[in-house]
Length: 357
Image (cartoon, rainbow, N blue to C red; front, side, top):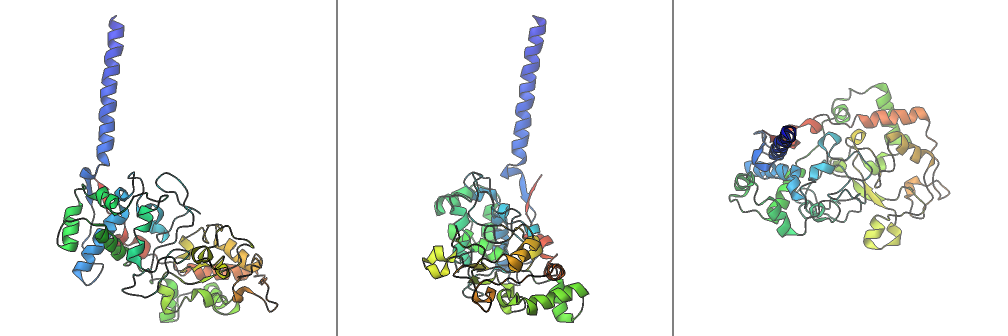
């Protein structure tokens, strides 16, 4: 009998301890015990713009913008990966796969700075402020059901009244303010501090192999005709739409799917190559795990699609077989790695502000 009472007592105590342990675990991630690491480093010479971008930074990392508090913008856009993801297809709030590979966020601007910037792989958005909430309300990605749900998701959180007041002069939370703040933050993420840019300025700083790769990139294989690494839009999020012969028949027709024009089937946005070393896997569906695989495609894997870009066709009008030698591939990849910006991926202004006490 005493033994039974002892076991019951132990069970009760264990239950209480387990309950308290759960409570401690829950409280450690509760918004009330979080604080924001927001250094006073400006995003802009304009203090108000900096305050709006600071609010956007918090929103970007806040999982409360998803329907079940599971996903933030940063879940699929990781700073260390130039705000891309390291999987072919990311997973949304219910662990379902997204439909396309996550594009990096860098050198992306709203139309107030640069006109006609095409966003998403098919370019279906041209205004950053209109675009930023689309993943939030997407039924796979973050699952919020409209502006009211977006506002309600963060309305009770203790850290937002001060942030909204600093940014907008009052603590009222609206979807339009959220969109503007997210656009301000993402449009502040620039990448142009890399070894290639330094080489263009100073005329030195690259190895012999890297210079060889640069020359091959700009001349022999004409890569720059699409990627325009030294042009003004090199600092944007890419340019133009091309069919590069990934398939003879596409399961995802990209721009053609969007506009219904069969002449655009298989065309996708040309990506920015800044930080390309960090943004694997590659292509709209993430089919290529490495830069070596990408160059293998251009070397001998181009499909003879009817919409194949003319720059990838031979004089006979069919897909080229470039047959790129291995040493040329190695040199081109060495050059592309000079486009890596170590400062952007460690800049505290773009980092996760959420900490726990």
